[in-house]
Amino acid sequence: MRETFCFSIIMSRLTVFLLVIMILPSCVYVYQVQVGDIDDRKSFEPTPFMIRVSETGVNLEEVGDIAQALGSDSGKEGAEFLKMFQMGPTTGNPVYNERYAEDLLLLIKQKCPDGRVSGLTSIREQRKYPAISGEIIKINGNCLRKRNS
Amino acid sequence: MKSNVLLIMAFLVAGISGCTTLESLSLTNIPQERSKVVTAEREKGIIFYFNFDTDYADELSADLRSQCEGGVVSGILTKFENTCYVPLFCFYIVSRVTATGYCNQ
Image (cartoon, rainbow over all chains, first blue to last red; front, top):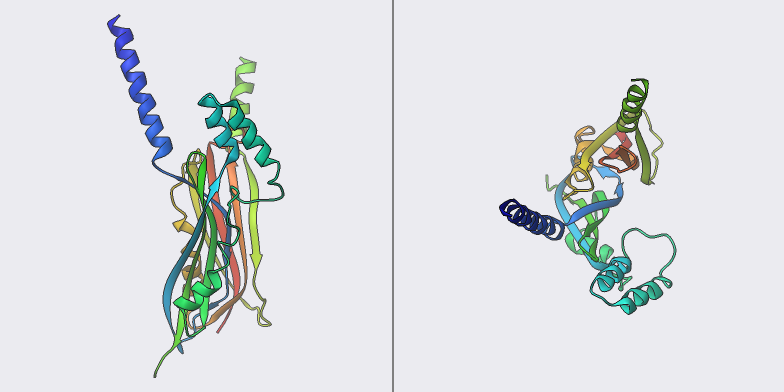
């Protein structure tokens, strides 16, 4: 009797621990890495910068599974119906604002108003949470300014 | 006895061999002068998809720059690949980014 009680306590704590592990940290997936030309001539002084844009992605399959687990079969059917309209090659989960990456050029111009940019490294990554995800584009680079001397 | 050895061999083959997937590839403008080649590589081992950062890829550009001080690196071929060990479960993944370019000084 006592052993069963201890076992149930251990199992419930293990379940809570696993749930915390699943929910709190977000696993990162990388889809694409690209390095651009690098200018390291002495006549320019490099200043590093970083830009990150992101949008929330939704995994309809997981949404359907959660709905089904909560007892709603219509939720699962609705999610499957919506999925029929999302097709073609993808990286990550679908987002509902397809223009979230369009401001990248403008943001680079803001970081580097002189216009000369070097060593652009762009990384397309996803931070995954249950049912939703962060669809991220990260850009590192150097802004080059002409040295005075 | 023989079947046990076969089983161990099968596990070893499954564990040691890895399946590689090419995730992305990019190339920038190639220069006329292509005598000096510079290469940078970064990799990260990930156990059972538990990965929390992508910082390993950030250092590639600085690494190439340090190999071509005072010059210009162009014609950069960037390759991003994943190698999955224990293929059935992808228990251990190595994410590797390789960048190769030409240095002009």
